Image 1 (cartoon, rainbow, N blue to C red):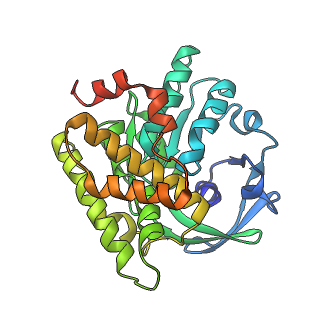
Image 2 (cartoon, rainbow, N blue to C red):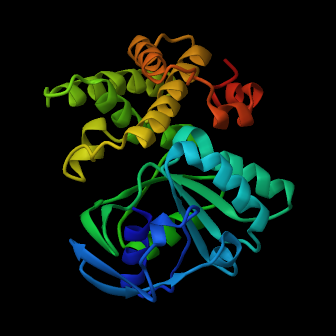
Image 3 (tube, rainbow, N blue to C red):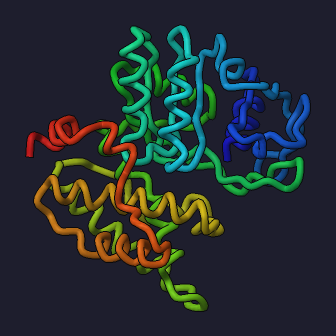
Length: 298
């Protein structure tokens, strides 16, 4: 999806540099990326050799990696970022943009950091090419101070931006991890089971949002906009699924609300993985005191 987002920005005339932490995301891409599907053509990009070169002098930075990979990558990004770029993290898994924002403030940097509920496109690799299967009709964003980020996102990707009320809201609006968990836990051969489990988890999410007086986009739109649930990757799904479930369980505990479906799903994932999964590295780094402050001191 990151390469698809880069291609969309390049198609709109922006100069784009791309970087993959493990190299797989940029393998086979030279001076241009070939795109098929809803966005078709060859668009110029520069493949950066390292993270520092990727972000050096950038006006905007988009981080698109699975939720469980974000804490480590954002820590690396905080060490090499300079200036005052607009930084967007997609998806905003478990308040992860706050990790970057706080690390940058400790360095005295003024970069504006925000989170997207989902990347602008749904895409997959086809060898050296990228297939873009869907382009979202709008972006849901929350930022840490200032309104520049929304304008930057709209300029980069060409779609309207809906501002959400804070990082808790945009992290709750991210349903990617809950969908991974639903697909992992649903019985095979029952196609209606994953959407049903996802709907039950989304109801618990909506109850948490209501307790916090947050207005979220409808859960039904999240995957309808991209044509349904994406293909399941088991390793990614286990990490993202556990992270999203632990986020709901932790918020529920802080608000004094039960989340029985999320709690049971998390326990089942732990049984399947044969190891504890409820430790959420992002929430641990944010700290209980800060989290309680975001929940209104509960």
